[in-house]
Length: 310
Image (cartoon, rainbow, N blue to C red; front, top):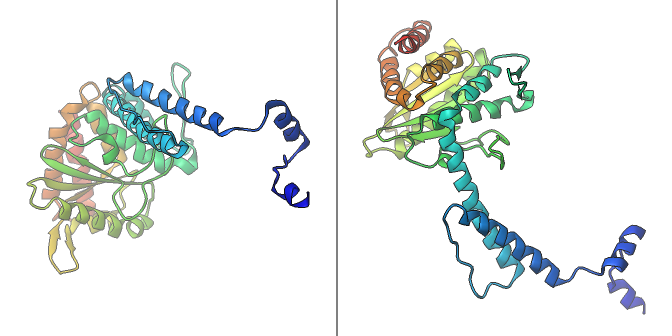
């Protein structure tokens, strides 16, 4: 009797005991039914996109059903994100509102329709990456899917759940004739160069090495609320040595957030038209990298504003 009592499940509370007596213990068939229901729900959602994912005839284990459900859910998430990416061309004003909030101490905006935008202070770096990602989705000229362009995670509502992890760029956007490595930061003053100078150059170098031989030019775009002069001076050099002492040429342009926002705003109605102008702007900015850092920063801003004025 003692051995039996040790092996018998005992509800943790009186309420749990009452519920188990009323409803009966959970049976394996109940769990299987729930797993099948979840699978069919996801499959039905995919069918709305015209897909007909097959279900193996011998699928009868809960773990296998759950695994297939997870696979189909990932496919569904990608289909939904593809729709979201296409929608961004019509969301430029919303993107600009979020970018504007990042420059303010009180990151809260009440719009005319009483819609409230708010960026929690602790989440501002993640929202910075997310808003810039959306800006490039609005340009709508990527040759790879949107989820391959970002390294930060998003939730089912497409909101950021954290910043991009280390050891890589925040975002990498591949277009038909160029690759853009984008890094963003809210760090200011001399701390900016210390925190971003080496990692940004290393991340851009990784992508340059990856795309060697493809014929696509790689640019680095560093966006900050304010560009510290020492940061600009670091990016002027445009060189990186690999472990075998082979030198890579880096083309990194530091751009103030205000200038980036102005560029995007100038193409609000047709954001896809920004891309060819942006490529020329990046090339022109690098042409003046032989200037002293303060003058180079000023020239970059001047070139951006000239493009806006056209």
